[in-house]
Image (cartoon, rainbow, N blue to C red):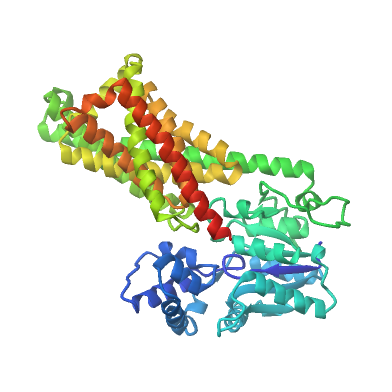
Amino acid sequence: MFSCILFDLDGTISDPKQGICGCVQYALRSFGIEEPELDRLEPFIGPPLAESFMKYYNFTAEQAQEAVEKYRERFSVTGKYENVLYPGMGALLHDLKASGATLAIASSKPTVYVEDILVHFGIREYFDIVVGSELDGRRVHKEEVVAEVLSQLAARGESDPDKMVMIGDRSFDVEGAKAIGAHCIAVSYGYAQPGELENAGAEIIVRDVEGLRSVLLGGTQAGSGTQAGNSAQAGRDTQAGNSTATGSNSLSERYRGSAAKTKTKSGQFWSAVGTSALAMFAYYVISLLISSAILTAVSVVYAIGLQELEGSSYNFWLNVASALSTFGAFIICYGIWHKKIRFHSTKEIDKLSIVPMVILAAAIAIGMNGVLTLTELYRFSPTFQRVSEMQFDTPVWLGIISYGILAPLGEEIVFRGVVYGQLRKVLKVPYAVVLSGLAFGLFHGNLVQAVYATVIGCLLALVYEWYGTIAAPMLFHSVANLFVYVMLELLPFGGVFLSVPSCVLFLVLSAGSLFLLWMLQGKAASRQKG
């Protein structure tokens, strides 16, 4: 049992989305910027506000400070109360306090607001120390906040970091704990991006309040004896220093036991696989149902079987049905899983790297088409031949909309946003990349597209990983599809791109672009860490 437990507030004790994002909207509106989607403003939850305004909207330091003042104009009156405790949190705080632990708040939010929120929820009595930032801009970074908590604990004679744990939902909380040598438990129910907590080095990651109870109190809820075995183990444990609890330096082993640790990691893996499979199945079934409904309607209108239409008309309606079903599946899957997907990147992006990314998308698409054509792999896949005939026998405008816009939107939401995002939580990058690429390939249902989509899928996952936003693989996917469609179908000399010299040229260009992209984004990541 830890003697000192430090809690972050936003995204850990309470869900502040409505209040914070609503106030960010209010501040942006004062600059003439309309942002109707609250989900797009989730990255503002956690980090210092001024830095977020500069990062996501390119504000100058002066503009950012003005935006913070506008934000507080609404937050101080309304926003701070647009907040809700996570289920079970009040009972957990009560039981932790009853166990004799010293509880503290370490928040980047101004202390005056933190106090008001704790009083509003009736949980102020549980905390011995409450530390936040200052309204004048001092102590805004989590390391500074945690250091102040440590200072106040030291004044109480409770300054042993090995007996302290920081609980939070963002990488900043993990880094704050590391700065004072304390342990860290991360909660995945907050607002961290996929992979953020693992990459930051959280010792344990739990997915709900009951999981947090299980780690802190051994799984027993006071007064009920209910077991709460819902904690999820992070992929990387750090050394905990001079542990005296069981002779183990691993935080997870100290509180969960090595057998429980293995079981938890296995459960987390299969949970990720299950979510991925569900997303793929939903996308397929929704697309099939919508497409079938449209084709049935066309048959009724024509008062004949669809197969009786002439070839071009038949393919046209197949393409229309495909486009509309893709759009419908995209909308529904986005509605279900959008909270699991990274839309706003927390990574620094080298804008110059977009150039080699676009070149890579176009080059690998043509290069792979050349390889598959020259090896005549299509001979072994009658299904591919039928699909290819249908896809290219369509008006240009419909082909561009369907394959250049709608397909990338729908497939990226599912295969990179959900599938790769879930696998990335439980696997290292190379394994997550390969498995998500294989899933993307197998989903296409024929040999030729399976080979092509597996290679492209792996690259799309890497792009998602490097840029940290789903917009990047969407752009990559769109460029690849459009380049193939335009070069091979619309240009009269398109066949020249399928020759051996052309194939080699495009593959070499792909390798060079991939290397340059990796270098530029790697340097951007290094600058961000520095």
